[in-house]
Image (cartoon, rainbow, N blue to C red; front, side, top):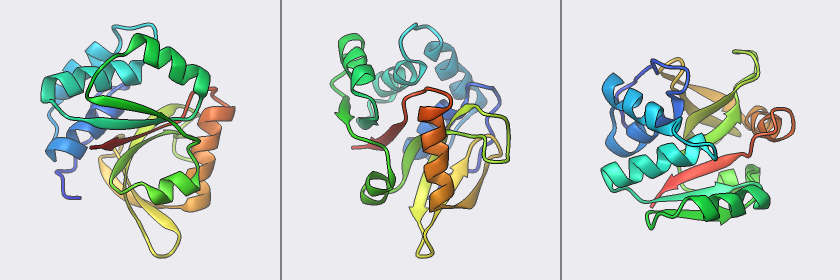
Length: 171
């Protein structure tokens, strides 16, 4: 995946930046801010509101793997968009290793970098040494993360922060 490295400018900018980089290869502060502001105009799901806005504005299609059936049903009721397919699936190493990279992953960013916080990253590739190459928009750079660490970041999002893990791919 080739994209221009870009460091998010806002606290809520990680998903807009990931979407822009994944689909367009670059991001601007203006685009990041517009998507982040649209995302907060909901009481249901910031992530799906940003994704919905993005898919309508840029005409991209996405598959979203949703880790929780209750949350999935709520999303299906409140977000209808022909460009977004919602799929019920546990976000684990089996799924993460079977979906084509690059993709966007919702994690707990706590792993020694910052306090517990929900965060979106791009999984750029799966390396031969059981690590993942990820792009972190907070730092605007890529790094390698061990499989077990990435799994912990997903499970902490689910079990500690009580957020539903998501895995987002382009169609």
